[in-house]
Length: 292
Image (cartoon, rainbow, N blue to C red):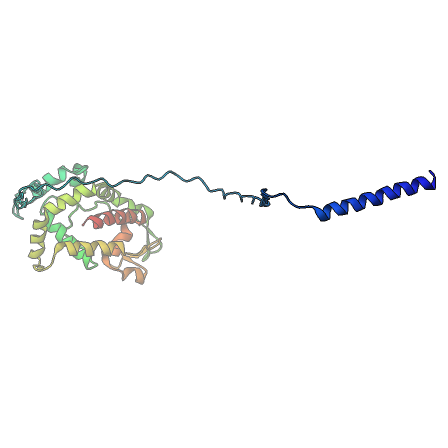
């Protein structure tokens, strides 16, 4: 392009710019028009998420009911309550059987009748004394309660066999083991008695035992207490191991050991019946004592 063309274009641009300045300086806003200013739209706030609540059980709300209007009624006069007395039924106990006891002198037949009713009554009667049985038992029990042992008037039949012994020399003897077997029948018969039946018979005969006990001078003592003492004497007796050496200075044998000979008579009698029979006897007496 030539320099003349460039100057022409520049002149046109300057002229146009001046014309626009002139228009701007002479421009007037037309009358009767209103300028509307559009306010800027505010930014909308983002709502926060609502907190999640645990579901709750629906609650039932009781709506109070309107009470009906009170109506005037005549007062009701109630009678005072009648107190009813309740009486508990009284259980009628069966009347105890009244046993008519015989006199002490004529009591043997009554006692033997009661013994026959025991489980092994016939065997018991066969080893007992034939007459004045209650008096014999009372004297026997009284002697044992004081550590003694009567030599006569026993409530059971005497043993017919002599005590078997073996000579060591002219003055010293030893008791044979077979000597204990002489008492097996009596002990076995006694321990085979039914304890409950025997105690029931003893309680029935109690007044006769007490009367016989008063006859020998114990009017103010209870025979039951004496029987307990006799049982305790037997139960507390020590066991003496054999062999048992004997001497015979006269008719009766005596224990060669002074300690054994000085024991209570009832304890020496337990040695004669032997350790096995003694244990049987003690066991039976314990059961009697528990029910006495």
